[in-house]
Length: 115
Length: 344
Image (cartoon, rainbow over all chains, first blue to last red; front, side, top):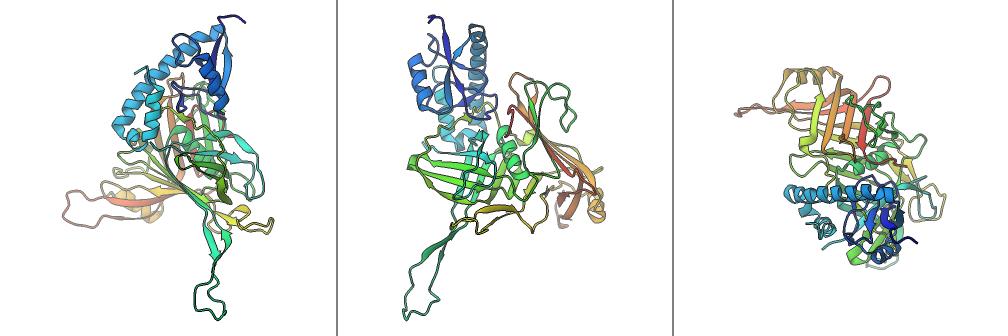
C-alpha cells in the first residue's frame, strides 16, 4: 500500500443535498459529493479516528480519495469552513443560533481549530 | 445542551402497526424547532355500566389515534420534502442551463428543479406518508411513527425569524422503540432558511394595494381508518378523505392600503395570476444560482376579506383570503430549486 494514499469520509445519508453537513461530535463538514480528507498532517481527524467514526456513525463511509481529487476536496473543505464561519455568525445575529443552541454548538465544534 | 432528532423517510405505502413498507432512499433530519408526537390514547371508560359500584371503574386501552405536528423553518431541502409529503412526489429535473423555473430563470447544472403541479398526487386512494424516528436523545426515549400523513402545511414569512413552516397530520402508528442508533446530520448553518427579505410577489392582481404580508396554506384532506385488515388498536389505513374535497392551496394577503381594485376583485371573484417568489441569499453548490421556492397560482381569487374599520388612522388597510382555483387544470404549481437530487 502506497504511503501517499489518501482517505476521506463521505456522507452516506440517503438523498442528502450536495451541501456541507454537521455531524456531532466530529469536527469539520461532511458532504455526500466530496470526501472530507482525513489522516493528513493538517486534517482534523487521524485515519484511526476516521475509521472509528465510520464504524460508529451509520451515515459515514471511509473512502479512498484518488490523487487527482485531493485538490478539489481541499478546496471544498476550505470553502465550507469559510461559509460555515459566516453562517454561524449570521445565525447568531438572526437568532437561529439562539433557538437551536445545540446546533450552533455543534457547528462551532465543527469549526474548532478553524475559528 | 439539548439533543434529539426526527428522521423522516417516505413510505412506499402507508405503514401501520404490523406492515413494513420500504422506505425512500431520501432521509431527512429537519432542523426542528419542535416536533410533537401524540399517540392519541382513547381508553375505554366503563363508568356507565351498572355494577352496583359507586366509584370509577378501571379504564382499559381501547384505541390509539396518532397525530403529529412540526414547526421548522423553510430550509430549501426541508420545504421540498414537506411539499412532497403533502402534495405527492415532485417531478424532478436536473438543471442543464435550459430548463427554467416558474420565474423564467434557466436552472444551471448542479441545481435541481422539483416541480409540484396540480392536480397533485399521488394518484389513487392513498396519500403520501412518512415514517418518523423521533429521538428524545437526552431522555433516552425513542419513538417510531408510521403512516404519518400531512393534512395541513402553512408557510408564513414574518419580518423576523425566517419563513416558518407548520405541518401536522394524522398517523397510523406511534410507539416507543429501542434506540435506533441513528446519527443525525444537519445541513450547515451556511445554508439559511428563506427569509422575509427573500419574498416578493412579482405577479399579482393588477392595481392591487401594497401588500403587507403573504401567507400560504395547503390543506390535504386525509383520514386514518380502521378497515379491519389487521388486529390493532391503531388505525391501519391512511386514505385520502372523502370529505374535504381536493388538495387546496389558499392563504391570506393583508394589504397596507385599501384599494378599489381589491374590493372589486373580491366582489366579482376576479381571477388573477399570483406568483410568490422566495429567492435565497445563498447559492447552490458550485453554481451561482440561488436556492428558490416559487409558487404560482394560475387563477387566484379572493374568497373573503374586509377593509379595516373606518377610524382615525392615517392609513387604513384591508385583509383578504385567497384561493388557488382553475376552470380546467393547473391551478397551482410549486418549484423548489435546491441541491437535492431526488425525493424518492
